[in-house]
Length: 428
Ligand code: CMC
Image (tube, rainbow, N blue to C red):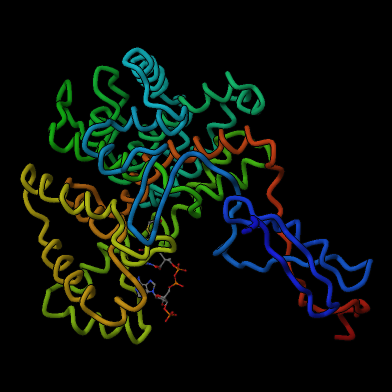
């Protein structure tokens, strides 16, 4: 009869071991009993970049990369994008269930009434250079929030954790908007609590001299959906940073700053910015074949393509491609879409991309939409961070409540020098 176990024969010793298989996984620690000598350390698994290692058990987000499926708490991303709002999705991610009407009202109220940041934070932002990247400002100021809320250190107190979660989700748009306004030399706009989460963010970004900002409903809805699409993506680089840094039991602002820093890189949340730079550089559809040849010759990457998990079309990219036209209808077409569409068409027919299963990911079209909305490129990763903050907090909360989790501490294979004597500088 089939057994849920794995039998391993160590050819170095001839010994056989039986390891339990649970959820299609063996426990890495079970390998440690496999030794040549009694005082050996025991066998380890070597997995640079965690390509085949589950770091946690999670009930938040499900991805089937082969079939292009993404679900938050069991709900397909396409349905949430169609029918939910960002705050409802944030509630779902954190609490595990869709809220009732009154739960959503209370959650929305709590987020809305935490949108303001201490005036000193705004002054702190004034200290950045005029051309500071908004993501650098966001990362630093989220970390700085820890100094304003010393109670955030009580990570074992569920009530304190809940309050900090409201604060992070509420204040990220305010900090992001302040960062954007600083870059443009515009005065900071205070939150408007009569607007929706996303409408208020648009107001803080774009309000000029008018007494009250009225967001364009189409843009407000599309941006809200973009936040939903970015809200979580299981154990990606920044979620892993959030969990890893949070596992030291540091406050959530410091852990969120670490996650922001991870997100900033061009291979992660910085890819949306990199895509627009790439499309600008290509400049015209006639230059695409030459660009594709450069990518295939390893002289650059096709940004916005490829994914560690998706080996099929990223389901978020499908929704975003559709949203692009809703934005163009509202504010006019971004001409880069023609280059992007042609690039996608050619790449999806090319053996190089087909063999490696490289498809458009979430970032391929999002930058084009943000640009059409009038946002400069270096604000794009900041928008990703606003949406993803909900997922980071859900991952953090789950990690803290998981009795199997301890401080994150990977092992290494040491290949450096053996013990040697220190040599005085005069003798080297
Ligand atoms: N353009 C050209 N070749 C690529 C690309 C690309 N965008 N992505 C992967 N490849 C090639 C890569 O060169 C390698 O080829 P070979 O086997 O001949 O060496 C093969 O495909 C496998 O790539 P990999 O780098 O081993 O894959 P990975 O899982 O380590 O990297 C990735 C995933 C997303 C970092 C990578 O696909 C990439 O750099 N994409 C461009 C950046 C990007 O769009 N990032 C956003 C990711 S989605 C948003 C998010 O979740 O952050």
